Length: 286
Ligand code: C5P
Image 1: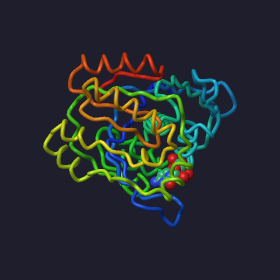
Image 2: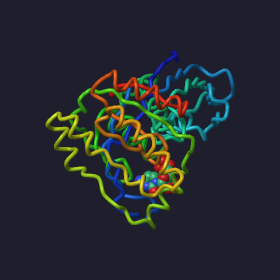
Image 3: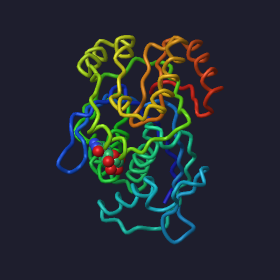
Image 4: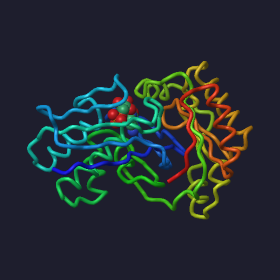
């Protein structure tokens, strides 16, 4: 087996709408997704241990099948009828964890792409996305990447015209949210507003960045505990004041992002927010 190095880009939810609770306990979603250049790097190589191991620069991440990167390799082998073998995955984590940026899902997607290469299986991205569904709801989108509409649990994907390239400032305030808890909470709150998904789709077709940015919206912001919502609003306020065309929380949070046309404005927003919260990043869309 050759050593393979892959990049796992973080994702943003340009919009996130929860349509309702399903019989299987999951929720039907409608989300416009976008990948950014910021992301993790992973190296897959023949294992020195007895099974699969994940080593990372973050000591608290699981090293076995509870890590989505390992879960993806195990699922790929099972689906393809390949006998598991010792494999070492070295994960250089850059994307903040528990942030709504799809870090773990993107790692899983990158492992699926790497496995496809290592085994010369030649599976299409669509087929890899179907395998990814078994690992997590955001994995299918992460296999596809770029700009896409995700529906159903997140596995019904439609490619969209790419978001015009722009600067992105990402900031994770100092709290984390449990995804299942926030999904449970959303069932009991009255949503103030819903995202204008159709408007975003039209703006993407027209290549109109300001019009997309004006419509960034995530219904989970309405389901946050008050103390957390205040921090999200504070970050959004700084982003907008510094010239962001729009800002929203990503996924179930707590990361908040703003889209910028001009690098200097993005740079000042980055500097102001980094002084408040260390997990702040300046990047660009893919
Ligand atoms: O699929 P995944 O393991 O990433 O989902 C994590 C949790 O998020 C689920 O256990 C569920 O509580 C919630 N979820 C949901 N509806 C979705 C996706 C996730 O309720 N479409």
